[in-house]
View 1 (cartoon, rainbow, N blue to C red):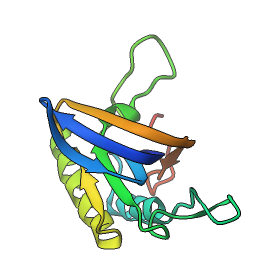
View 2 (view 1 turned 180 degrees about the horizontal axis):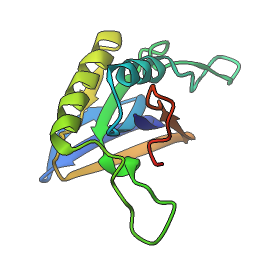
View 3 (view 1 turned 135 degrees about the vertical axis):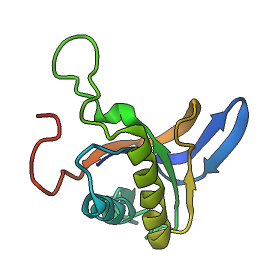
View 4 (view 1 turned 90 degrees about the vertical axis):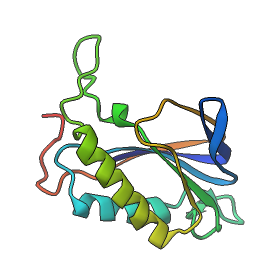
Length: 155
C-alpha cells in the first residue's frame, strides 16, 4: 500500500461542484492499493498513518502524531500512486489492484483507520474528485507498506 501524506491546515474534496468532505488541521492522505496488498499491509499502514510523528511539539520538533494533536484525517483513494513511472512517457498501472478489489480494500482500510482515529473523513472511490488543501510547512511524506512477501510491487 502507498500513502502520500501531507500535513495540512485544511483540506477538502469536492465532487460535481459540491463539497463532499472537509477537514481542518491534520493529514490529507492519498491512498493506493497495490495488487499484492493484504490485510497485513492495510493494518500496518493504518498504524503508521495514525502514529507517524509529523506535527511539531513545543520545541518545534516533529514529535507528535495526528492522534497526539487530536487532528483530522482525510483519506482519498488515488490509484495513480501505484503507477510504474520508471520508463517511457506514460505511466503503467500493472501494480495497482483491480478496481473491485481496490474498492473493497479501501473501504476496509477506512474502517481500520476509523477504529484508531474516529475523526476521519473520506473521499469517494471511483469519482472525479477535486482535492484542495493548504499544506502546512510544506510537510509531505511517502509511506509505503510493501507486500509481506518482500517483493517489489513494481518488479
